[in-house]
Image 1 (cartoon, chains in turn orange, red):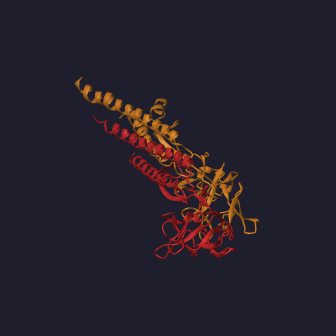
Image 2 (image 1 turned 30 degrees about the vertical axis):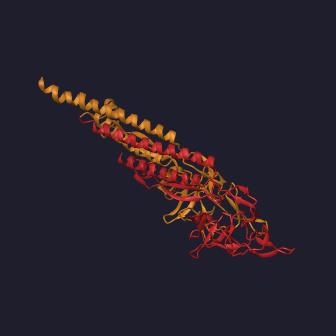
Image 3 (image 1 turned 120 degrees about the vertical axis):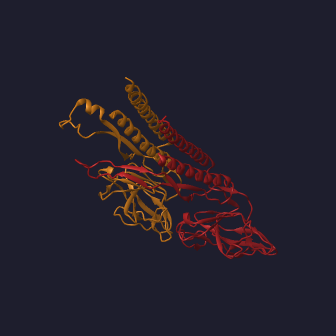
Length: 252
Length: 262
């Protein structure tokens, strides 16, 4: 049947998947360190019409080029910082991720709402240790905590002196596209080696999601309108062409 | 598309919980010693449609296709900033300049911790909270005492009738925790320790690093920043609205598809 019908159909399918991504981006506008997923569409040529193959034809290439959802990538842009005043709320200004030790190995996050465990270990709200520049857990003694932009933690002791007790690591990747979102604000590196990041750690702030509700709604409207167009095209094929073919032609 | 509906619903319920937290903060903006809480969210698991780096016919895919399934609330973080001090002049109003907590004994015998320092005397002369929980260690003020003085290091002294020199009655002790954010709020301005907060470390005021000193005649206000809460409230409301728009859009697309067949 008409390949245009399938082109419109795959286009509509792709938009329904894109709606899911838009919905997830909007649902997470309040999630600390959330990184928006951006969809991209790509064309898929139907087999047999590749140039040089048996059925090569320019017309075929043009009409059998379907738009499908090719994939999505993480937008690693900066989210807005919100001041909380808590000494263990950390945000990274610039590139980089905090490394945390999880049951699934070392994972990475931009959500810096950390706590000190009863044993003094710096950990996430899920209780997983936050790692230093050598990817080891950090123990913080009691006292007033100051964290420098390079991640050095100094604790003021009783006699008024302060000592550096560790350095929180910020890591990035030469190819950040290896990162996959794992949920619970974490990303897995899938075996890629981290390198030290140049982002500055800000104490007393948390980083929000990097897409606000306005951009989310715009993305939503775009997807909705594109879906409408595909649906219109489908209805043209269904009602104007195929119906005509099925009902009018036999009368001749 | 069904995913989009559930995703948006998760966003709406998360924002609803956020608004509940903000409402409680605002309701307690005049509660002395209250600690504001902020709801934290995290993203839910992702459905992997195409794994990044997986082999295709000719080359590996550079970016995968992951579809997220929404958000959920994970924790209410306690904001640990110091509240403003309010001068009252009442000799039994105490505020802590530092991270410590007062220890009080509840009627069931358990010890609870509070930042609210508006103390009173009960009919036996003991220093108690407004709810009648005794301040620990128990300090009894004799009925013939005048001129109650509490030093910044917690020493309680009074002048007894007919005497010129003040008499020391005892020393107030404060408690700190390894992780004060892990304390559980039990209402009536009280906190109880949990496995996450660790056990109380007690010391006299001015001792153990960061425990703080006392200020007599002052009360610590709630650390809720009303302006900040209003901003958060607007954000929560708008985020809720955006999520409801998603439901609307998904419903719209669904009905269009249903209407394709006439």
